[in-house]
Length: 558
Image 1 (tube, helix red, strand yellow):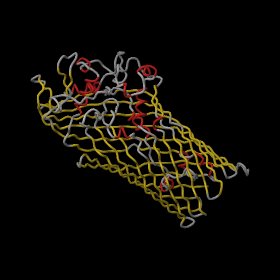
Image 2 (cartoon, rainbow, N blue to C red):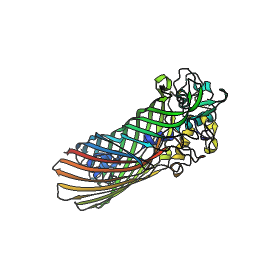
Image 3 (tube, rainbow, N blue to C red):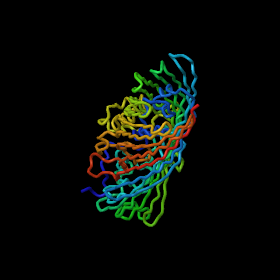
Image 4 (cartoon, rainbow, N blue to C red):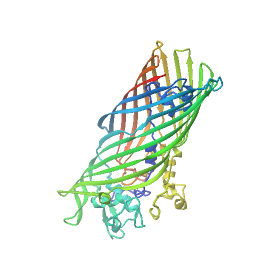
């Protein structure tokens, strides 16, 4: 039995004041299956085929397959459904989005040589990733409270009352006084009466609202928006119609936005009463909202080759460098609460968002492909893709502010191989080590087929499977998960599956393709990190995402 007011141990929690986390690294690098309707109808298994606008950003050697010019574009209708399940309590949400997924063209220069018949140039715009997702849920029979989590942070960091009641004007992620980063999650908790000090104000024991006789429920809602937009500049050709090669330069526009809400309705919560100046049991109803945005630009390079040793067989191989990003992020958070008949509110940094600039490298990627072509009627193709999520990395931007922006001993050093000395040389050493502990490399398998029913009409089908990027230790709640700023919630994705089919029509140089794409993915939502040292786990829910997309492409080859 826990003693009254005592919080979970939270022995190795950070302050929540750091600007990045492993969760952000994956959020910026999560995969998606998008492209032309022909590409999608075959499950994206196009790495050894080429001759399609989508292949410029998959295996750029596909541009070498072209023997004529092409202009085309792709539209996409995405119907999304999310369901949360917290011990049988289910909540659903729906939204529908419309996208321009792809537009571009390829120009062919015929050289009249049997050794090098042609050189090709291409430019495409691709919506490589859509972040648009929305989900919500309710969690009943709480065993602990986020207020106890915040109090655990304050205790672990040995925060004093002056630390959290400061009236200084801070940029919360780049302190302008040369001191420590403002512990905004603890400040917000203190201002909202979510946490209260017990004992000496200069050496207090911090208490949350959840005690021996407290009960209640929680609710959450998350809206993600934004996209990764690629502008591809590709160049390639072929050698004797046997070896096809290509290279692609991607200029990336990145925009991610998160609006996350979490709240609790507690009975018998221990809350400070400003009227009586004591902490006493009462009903507590409070909500916290976090707004977060990361946006910027990046670039990467891709190199690929397709070999056709015989007419019936094609082999493909492509290498993708990381995308080197320069990003700017902003945060803000606020709370609203009802205690003792009063409606109160608080916000971080007097309502002004904090900001931070930094660099980020996405994973390396390798794609190996094989395709069989039987006569002029049937194609079957398969891809294997390796994503090196452990190679994701943060680094400081040129205008990084540094200079005392970190707490002394903010982490449990026994958990990390990085030494405190390494932090002096790399301000992101712990975040990068955390990436290696939380995430693993993923495997993606794609298979697709196309059958030409008539010279003009084709049918297609495909399947794609993406393995979970999360290490089992993290997924099984056996480690502390560090999050960013005042956003304690996070989501871990499990395996993702795509089932696709499509139709295609060709008449002379004109084509029109239609595809249906069904995507199914489950995830685990956590309101805040579980405490590996306690049997009381954080409020969590299983999320199921089902997306149905209708993709239409049309274009002209000439």
